[in-house]
Image (cartoon, rainbow, N blue to C red; front, side, top):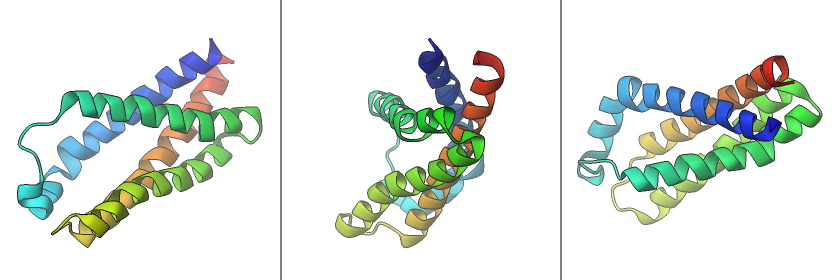
Length: 133
């Protein structure tokens, strides 16, 4: 039950923070930088699949090991690394194969992926240790 509750905590934190980022903080940046590359409407099934899969990855490679040995600091540091690698894979691939993909978007997105994953993983470990046991 603990892994499932941790997954729900992580998914909730990750989704809330990412929606704030994408909807309020960086929306105009992405729209202006990506221009015609950005879709008019979000592909909801693809977005849901990303969140479900990404959160599983963060659980397996970051949160679970941090809960077993290391605590929130390990989750923060490994979350930052995992986020950088995952978002970097996406962004650097786009730089390599997508005509007109801006370097500024890649750099901002990679920094956001590292930050978001680090914060979400650390908070998940803290909340799981405190309330789930």
